[in-house]
Length: 557
Ligand code: ARG
Image 1 (tube, rainbow, N blue to C red):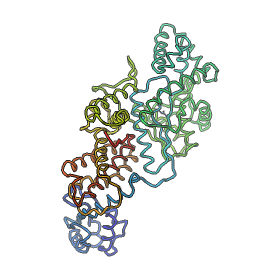
Image 2: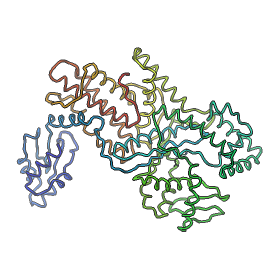
Image 3: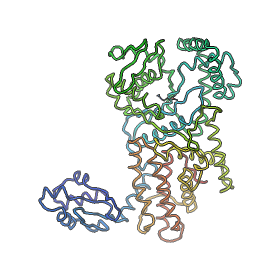
Image 4: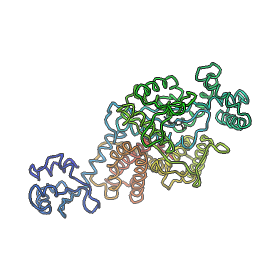
């Protein structure tokens, strides 16, 4: 529609402004009653030495009235009201034609690296890691929708002095079989025990240091143990990834950079950036504490490995963007890291972006997987799925494939509960609330999709071009939302904010349900096929929105 309006205005203005200039001037009025689009005449007034009111009236008089529902010159603006019929045909037929590609951008042949999830080996997968996983996955999907190649990297925490402690602890108290059957729980147990014992016998710490040194120098026994810890832990994490339906392109964790730090440190030295401080080496960065590169004993740190990782990723992928989806509490670390890379003179430091997020709360308090008894994430997910199953049992006891659908709904509820708020907000983890079929929840949207799917199925509807001549007013709010989908997808990626898509999906589902409450979609009259086609468009966009968020859209629920 916009294009047609611009051409019409171009003609009416008789060459005063070109297509692009008109496009830039057009605005969306603040209030609906002021039209669908408005053309301000203030900048022309100067040029033509006439009042904007007069120009608006003159130009409005020259527009082709039959294209619009109404044209009104008001206070120096020309307010234009669309003919709904034209808009409806344009929007809905585009969706019927493009289907799930609606809103997709052309491929741009550029990589976006997304570092997300990244749990620590031999430690529980925390709620924070869950948030990173869910947000990172949605961002990767959004990057792809916007034409980029997404590279999903799981930067596993599989290196550091804690592995020395773990090796010592294992040799003293480890039970191979117990670890094999529940790795994280058992490894954590001996890790905790190590700390308790080390209080009493400090020499354990020396043993741990030695063990880690052995690991760094590829001592065979230490390496074997480390590999095993990594393997069994990863197997447990993989269960969560499978439930969430998430996969990665790379599991290069911190250990992978073991032999890549030395060249990076060398480069810092050559560039004169490395400063000695009490035997340790640091890089000084403006307005922040210095970034620690090596400790007194020569050991490298988390930041050293991230520096090597960023350089490696640049060489490997030349990303257009590097996203690090990591909790808010690591902001300082990433600011330091990015500043160091900038000081090294790398222009690509501008492409690095920390995507922080808030905490997970339960009853208003931080939900911790560390203190006291371990809450395993797999258990939390199983509980949610179990609850979803009970709900289904009550609502739709004859449903086929109950197990699978309960998993889609339970997992979807967790994902949506996370993504419906801006990521910087803390989120409340209440299984009951997030499964509420009527609330602002994942199941509510899934249910709306399933409802439409069943309508389409009952009517044996096949999507194809449709002449929309008598769809009726009630569909209009949802159609306007459908038109906003491409823009929403673009903004969500640009702002690294999946909540824009989640909120959009809620609005669309609500608008459709309002329509559904008023209108009998399956009534046998001449507009039935139009109502089905419109419903199908809503289903297409809802399904695609859910997919972007990382959720499944079952056809029956
Ligand atoms: N393993 C780290 C943690 O659990 C997160 C790693 C994030 N990614 C990174 N490149 N630093 O805190």
